[in-house]
Image (cartoon, rainbow, N blue to C red; front, side, top):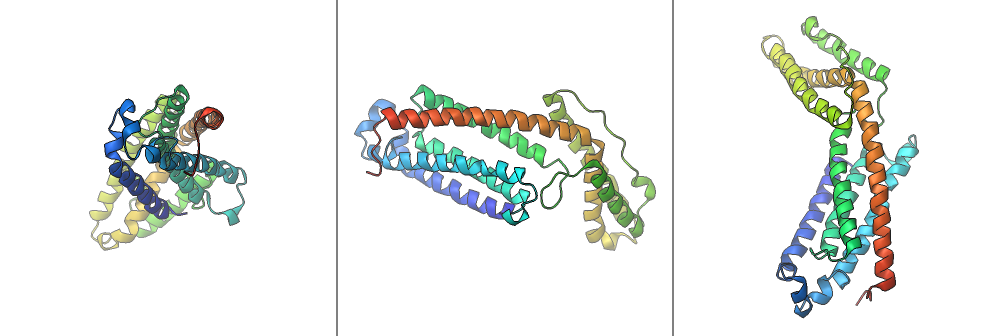
Length: 282
């Protein structure tokens, strides 16, 4: 699944859930004590036809979301699709499940387990968004596999050779010095933010060098993409240890938060099935 496909499916899911909330807004805006008298209560309440369907759909998406871990474990199973495609699927199913949970709750969380599940889901989603930001900074192949340091050096050397052949000043194409690794999760996150600023500055220097050379200006459409890749990979090589360490710390945190959230969701499903008034479909 490409990012464009995932984005399109995500937009469809957001539109569908938004339409459902819009149609049922006169029900969702009522206090809990007033809802049983509403005409759509049997449909939209958490155990109603629509509400329960959203809950079941969210549970299915949660399980599907974990298949990314299986694909990541079988790293060389290329026939199953690239890691980038599976990451897009992972993000899509996670966010879609969160939207279904909101509709399933009927925008009113009453039980303690439900509150814990929604809170846990919110924390996992936030850490997932942060993780996606980190993921975008870790050097990877087109397939999605993380690059080793030597592989990144070779790729950077290829960019340097190509830019030198175009006639770019060699003094602008030096090997980056390693940045001391920051200690702690938040310090490493801040290092990414600072590094992004440095990356934009490095690219702007290369861009200006191309635009200020009359013989290079007509070739800007070919030179600048390579210059951007060179600046990006140079930045990643300088912060290689920091980025890999940050990715490892985030994976550990996100994985165990997801396990805890799934345990709460499983308990919530069991209690609802065992003690709730579930008769679906109605």
